[in-house]
Amino acid sequence: MTPFDLSLYLVLDPCLCAGIGMVETARAAVAGGATMVQLRDKTGDTAQLVATGKVLKSTLEGTGARLIVNDDVAAAVAIGADGVHIGQGDMSAAEARAWIGPEAILGLSVETPEMAAAADPALVDYIGAGPVFATQTKLDHKLPVGFDGLAAQIAASSIPAVAIGGLKRRHIASVLAVGARGIAVVSAICGQRNPEAAARILATEIDAIRSRR
Ligand code: TZP
Ligand code: MG
Image (cartoon, rainbow, N blue to C red):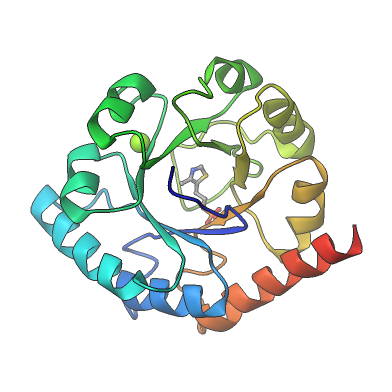
């Protein structure tokens, strides 16, 4: 399987990235220490998604950061992305795995311990656990679960977890303490005046907390 590091997982948002664009935001974030980039664009059509994804792929080439595509498995394959991220309402993990093959990375969003427990470690490579806090970025998000709810989701599964939902630098210690392998963020990087510096602050904090353990 393609190796990956969930430490600092950037989820792109085309609206929040409107200033400099998703590709430049991703380039800057990875220069600052982001380890994964998810292309999540619900605004355009598949052709546009694939076109953006191909530019992102070449931008991230050689950096070690992994490119994941949200929802659209066919687009992920067309882009040649490292993997795909699905939610509970998307195609099943078995179907997604069959499309992308054994090597690609498959992520699944979970919102409860029951959903985490139901995720099959033979199919799913990581879970996106949360939402930890309420967020303006995803208006239809489920009820925030806080650190205790996050801990319960992570404890319910053996699959590596990345935490998501309203996460900022000040939350990193608590998130890592309950067993998350990293944080997934949108607004902490997208739309920040200096996305590279914003990513570097988060990545440095993650490293500092790990080195104190
Ligand atoms: N899924 C659950 S919360 C969320 C997604 C995509 C958005 C998180 O955005 P932010 O800005 O990091 O709170
Ligand atoms: Mg989805």
